[in-house]
Length: 63
Image (cartoon, rainbow, N blue to C red):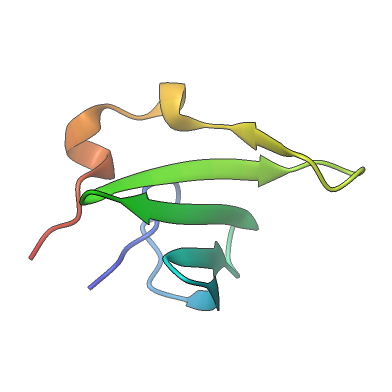
């Protein structure tokens, strides 16, 4: 089960292959090799990485 590393919500929508959107804190998540990468969507549509805000344990998918 995928959980948002930012707000711990399970309210995620799938927006692409291995890409999700958190409807509670409005960040985009992508998954690669079992690691969640978090991004903030900017006003111009670009993505800014939020990975430096979380340690690797918080970004690892728990099975």
